Image 1: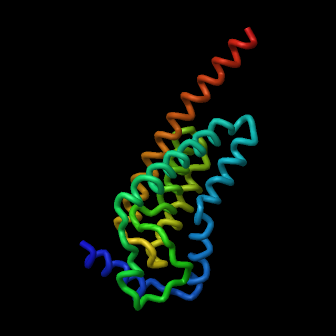
Image 2 (image 1 turned 90 degrees about the vertical axis):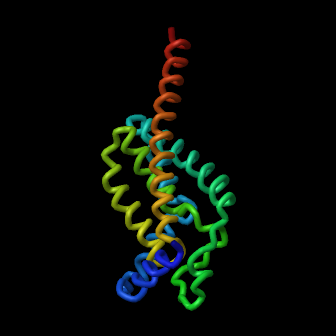
Image 3 (image 1 turned 180 degrees about the horizontal axis):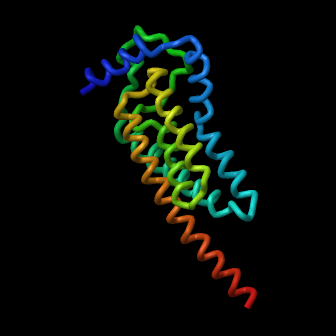
Length: 183
């Protein structure tokens, strides 16, 4: 399996590398080095009453993703990164120091997308476009195996959906408490 994935990554390096992408994709990937773009989105959504539930959904999805991806799965699998297998590759970005599976950038991005979708936000479509570019950038940058990215997308989708569900329940509980104190 590793040989097939290495062949895919090497094909991207041989036929998909372009000078402008060498500049743009490291920048786009860095937007999510620690989930920054999605945390910022959640904060902005939480700041306004009409989008507060959507912000809560994204926050819950990102929290569930953080626990599942970074605290449980990465240490459990401890998968070596592709650039450590093919040391001849020239990295365009700082070498990540944690395990490879699943892709945290991809998982956080898809967690935000699916939380937005669950909560009914129209922002899920542009978020999906950015999430796909972030996920593909991880392959282009040679820092993740294709199955890491696929696993991150699945994990993120599940975390985002669960985060949306959890946020809906939490918001409902808070509303009940508010109504009790008023009445």
